[in-house]
Amino acid sequence: MPDIEDIRCFIEVVDSGGFGRAAKRLGIAKSIVSRRIARLEAELDARLLTRTTRGISATEAGLEFKMRSERILADLAEARDAVAQHGNGIVGTLRLSVPLSFGVRYVAPVLAEMAAAHPRLGIDVAYSDRIVDLIGERFDAAIRIGYLRDSSLIARKIAPVYTVVLASTDYIARHGRPRTPDDLMRHECIVYTAASDPDLRFRCGTRWTSVRPRGRLLADNGEAILQWARAGLGIAVVPTFLAAEDIDRGTLVPLLTNYEMPEAGIYVVRPPGSYLPAKVRLLIDTLAARFGGEPYWDACLLNRLRRRQASEPAAADCIASG
Image 1: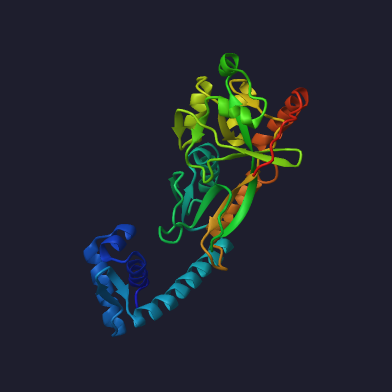
Image 2: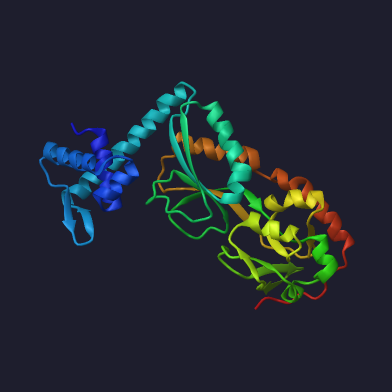
């Protein structure tokens, strides 16, 4: 019977398209990958791989074997999860991708609690705002913030995300306070470059308006944008999970609070398939328990913004978006 590790190695070679890339992903020497594939082909008495100008690809027999082997490995993982749960434990390594700022502030403490509660659970986290390829890069799940694109991935919404326009009291004293979204075009804005859409949308009543802020300071990270805003360098637009502490301390002041901005979301996404590994289920349930409903960073902040909104002059000149 073929060895399980030989089978895993073969699947990795096909998915990565080469022995060297497979070895790097598996953390073993390329020579070991070659020996395992040779042993597997000898035991099955079949050629599973062929070399092409683009690298390594599976033969027809190899594709058939890969499809059935993946099903076997999924069943094996499910069986291991079932046995582990009888012992009240989660086993294996959770490989997770999370956004940098949100991940360090909010997800890292949750993962620490999970690790402490489940000593047999390994956690391997990539903190980056890059959108990773879950299947190609072998991630079990990813946390994504914003608006999800259509894909084959399975998504679970954990919490809403609200956005707020902010500036320091020093900036407002020097440049004045914008009263409408169009006023932002006459201000120095700190631009977030990683947004899928560079336009900001605002709603007053039933009408929407869009503006594209401009400024000399650009960054792809919310924490950096907050630091520049605290220094009085411009107006920032950031999610409330980053802004709540600054608003509470008074270091940054909410602006345009009579205008509503579109609600985004915090999602856990995972590869397609009906089987949900216990380690991913644990992650989803833990995050939903901690952040679900109205997240705690918004509980007090939204009430404060509503009070401020009631005291500000009504915004009458909304412009319908085209």
